[in-house]
Image 1 (cartoon, helix red, strand yellow):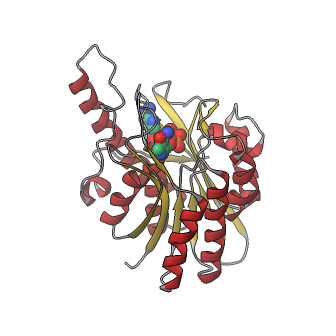
Image 2: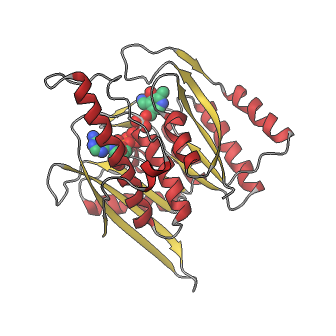
Length: 306
Ligand SMILES: Nc1ncnc2c1ncn2[C@@H]1O[C@H](COP(=O)(O)OP(=O)(O)O)[C@@H](O)[C@H]1O
Ligand SMILES: Cc1ncc(COP(=O)(O)O)c(CN)c1O
């Protein structure tokens, strides 16, 4: 497989978010991954302390110029995540648009990182940039519920609302939308969290078909960081391998997530001891280490067609 991904995400020295979370799992599946580190931090920002550097829009532009001068600006995928700066984000969109002109079948996978559980963790001026420029350029987006609500200005309190929001997001551009987590109740009970997916595609006869799915994911009582980044990378890989079958791509993605999360929480409880809440360092993802970790997760989770 010769499939090249440009991944513009965070780098951390310690732990797994951004490119540290996304690169190796893609490489082990055979993707070539070119990484631009939007920030280089000591660790993710959920620790008590963090230090490091933030890449500017100009610095991003310089790196891209180097790639372009060598005429190696040919990509099959662009993957983007956490960004805190408006002009950096606008430069990312300009690069995506230029890469799409060079390769019209390029797929842009965008995790519109804005916040979670009702709170923003990037500056508010990024919302209109994501809404008006980034999402319209994207083919696959992976917002959580809060991000999907911010992008559409609609709140989600039922599955019907979620379907309307996913349809609104389709009308902004992307043909694949996955809401990676929500507050919606699962029919399997409150030990499960609900994720939803929607894919629009054109049949051979030219008519449109939409596949909409619900995923009921066993909930673990802890806050993980870097999961959104691993989810987007795995969705890229599995939609590449199953381009017109979101249900299969999502089942494979959530099964890998479940495997990593189970391993992480088991380890974290072991090192924290039975009565103590694990620290952010103890909750760092116990990452993918081999192709088998991805291809043969211990438990296979199913999605249902809605
Ligand atoms: N507490 C949790 N329990 C079980 N799975 C989780 C948990 N947190 C994250 N995940 C997994 O990670 C995926 C992405 O998580 P999410 O929190 O939506 O990402 P983001 O960081 O983008 O908000 C979920 O779809 C799920 O598979
Ligand atoms: C530097 C950095 N990069 C990326 C992320 C995104 O992590 P997640 O996949 O959990 O959204 C975070 C979390 N705040 C972060 O601190």
